[in-house]
Image 1 (cartoon, helix red, strand yellow):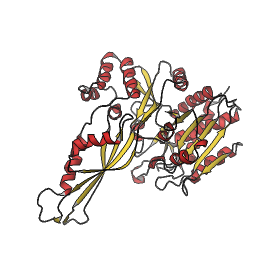
Image 2: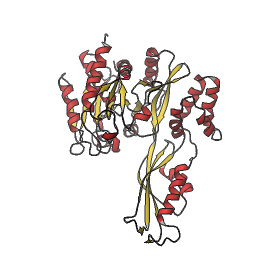
Image 3: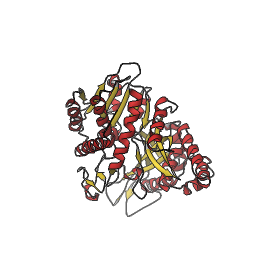
Image 4: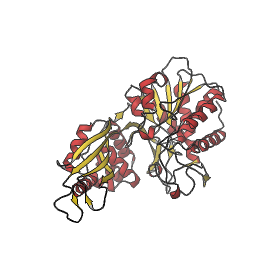
Amino acid sequence: MFVNWDDMQSRVVNTLQALVRFDTTNPPGNETPCAAYVRDRLASEGIAATVLEPAPGRGCVIARLKGDGSEQPMLLLSHLDVVAVEPEAWTHPPFSGDIVDGYLWGRGSIDCKALTAIELELFLLLKRLMVPLKRDVILAATADEEAGGSNGVGWLVQHRFDLLDAEYAINEGGGLGVRMGNRWVFGIQTAEKGICWVKLRARGEPGHGSRPWGESAVAKLAAAVDRLARARLPQHRVATVEAYIHTLGAVLPPSEGKAVLGLLDPAMEEEALKQLPDQSLAPVLYASLHNTATPTILRAGQKVNVIPSVAEAEVDCRILPDQTADSAIAEMRERVGHDIEIEVTRSSPGVESAYDTPLFDTIREVICELEPESIVVPNMVAGGTDGRYLVAKGVKVYGLRPSKMVPGEPSMFALIHSHNERISLDNLGFGTRVLWEVIRRTCS
């Protein structure tokens, strides 16, 4: 089955440029025009698609190619919304889709419109080549992932799960290849952390700013936030992360492999993180082994000369799949003390999908064909995706947008949600080829 890959890369690049030029900053999102673009592209090649709005302007587009029904469907999932930007801090305008020095620049170029562009073009290719399918292939590009998904996949799962119900889903969050020794190691996301967002609240006696007395609410909160920010919470290990670390330890040169395996010993972990051959992995691996609690918002007082009676901090706490909100709060309580109130504002559990499946085997097979001697391992993301809604319904969700980290260039981790987000054209081409083979072999 011949595919002109230069032509496909050009198609994906052009589609990604078009998607990036829709400003879908969430809030407010306003994904419907972008969803309508995807619908119209599908309609131009005879594929019917539906745009659903969980809320006004919050468009999700869904389409289906029918198979013979001998196997359960595969879902190609992505999201259309993006996080906010500070345009003045960007080298190239964040909604331009400019191509400079082999990179396509723009908010969402990595997270997650590149995956939308690849999945859309491969969906169209399946139709164009009339590939016989043994399972339905579903395309869904949705709203609101960046704000939790309640106006996107969360709503669809609750009200129209029939449109998404599948055995497998390909989602964002994984597929990055990192050079270790003389081999590429590709992490395929099979797990993600949950959230336990909290408010810390301190109380104290109010008064005039010129007459401080005792410990104010602001001082109590500041001390508690400082302790929490510096804390190393206890180590916990889940199957996905243990498999990842053991695989790295086996394939790296002995000295480096020993350092990586040291991560699994709480007493050696801190030193092992310092010895990692690629230091960009240190915060990622640390977050994979711990619940984390990051203070992000501080709030107190209304006038400079008034000591407030209440001070609050908001904390982004991420919990491992085997942990709960209660266990995370207990770990935070040890650090902030018992005179600080802890209020949970939002929580959802972490999730983990099995990786001993035919699809995971196919992913490994395809990547190793295109990059011989590569290592393909399950991986966990420290953040969350819409995949958690689907895992809860029994769908096996894998994060897979294949790409390779270029030595000397900013990593994907550094560019997501950051200034100057951009993706290399070569990685768009590589990801397209890998995903095509994975989808074709799994579905035809």
